[in-house]
Every structure is written in C-alpha cells, then in structure tokens.
Length: 256
Image (tube, rainbow, N blue to C red; front, side):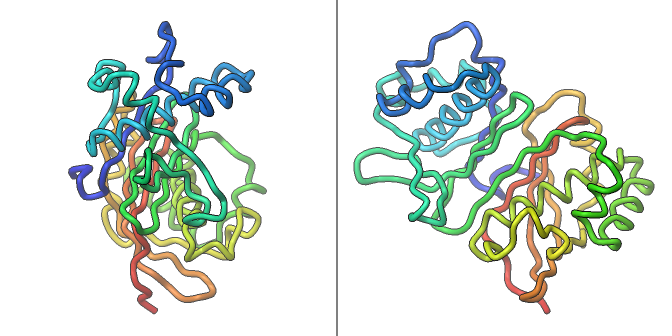
C-alpha cells in the first residue's frame, strides 16, 4: 500500500551520512546538543532523525531518504528549521518548524535507522525496534497469554520468525503508549493493553522477509483492549528480518 495512507513519513539510514559534516544543517541550539553526544551510533541516529524531520517539514514528502534527497534544499533552509521539544506542549511530542509555523513530529531510531512522521494536529507515534531473542520471562511479563498464542499462531501460519512477530506486538504497544489516549499506561504494565490483529497479517511476510530496509509500509487493522474498552486501530508496519517499524496516525473510535 502507499505510504500516503499514513501521511508524510521518512526513513534515513544514518550510515549514509558518514563522510560529510552536517553541522551547517543544524541550528546553533541543535549543534550544541549534537556536540554533547559521545557514542558515535547514538550521535548519527540523532542526526538522521533531525534531518528527516526537517526534510518532511520543508518538502511535505517522505520516503526512504538518501544524502541526494537532503540536498534538494540548501543548508540555510535546514539551519533555520529547528526540531524542539517541550513536555508541556502537545503531549511532549517534538515539533519541527521555524518562525511561528511548527508541526508535531514523531521520531524514533535504532539499529542505525531513523524514522520521522509529520503530524497534522492529531495523535501520531512511531517506534522502531531491533528484533532480538528474549527470555520467556520477558514475554510472560509483557504479553498476555492470548497475545503470545496469537503471535505464535500467526508466525506458524505465515512462516514468520516468532521473535519478529512479538517484537511487532511490542512496537505497536509502544506507539499506542506514546498517544494521549493511553498515557495512563507505561512500559511497566504492558499486559494491561492487549492486542489482536484483525486483518492484514498476511502482508507481514513482505517486511519480515526483507534483507534490506526499503521503508515501504503495509497496513494492519488491530484491536487494542484496555481498561477503557476496545478500539480498532490502523497500524503501518515496515522493517526487515531484524527490524520492526510501527507507526500510527490518530486513535480510532472505541468498538466495545
């Protein structure tokens, strides 16, 4: 499906930024923050997230970015566009913009990949997770029995890596927890939010089997049940064999 169903979203592999100094793309305040990072990977992921956010604001178009895409705009345009964060505004979402014009932006990064989703005034969230084998205690502590059974059945039916499927469930939950509708929950009580894939699961074969990350998204319809009832949520999913990306725009109406 087209990414337009989700809205302007961009991904950028931070390793592609090696070999060029992007200081001139950052505002003075951003350069000061950038200089404080010591871990090279964390530093490059942060930069990729900021550049992706600024590109979305300037172009209103997303996709899988490369340095060739970034130079569509001069460094001065990036420098005058800033990513800021105020926990008291818009539920703590970062904002990107300049002057009096700012837009919400959701940013996530891991494994060298950064992703940014541009907002339109409603709830947005994005989460990237590395697929790893975790202990049974972790799975029992973060997923309900029905979720574990559902994920196992989905993996068997479609030939998916079971760790990839459970990482997807985790990533979707992380996205929901980043929205105001679920801010009463935290990562410490993940089983209080139970997921069920309603439709679209067959399309998960595409991102799970990919050897390279393309940034193409498929879409799921998911039921999320918590103490306030059940909502049907549309979730965009991308990734590769060792990476999961989930993103949402808006929180759908309660169904039960």
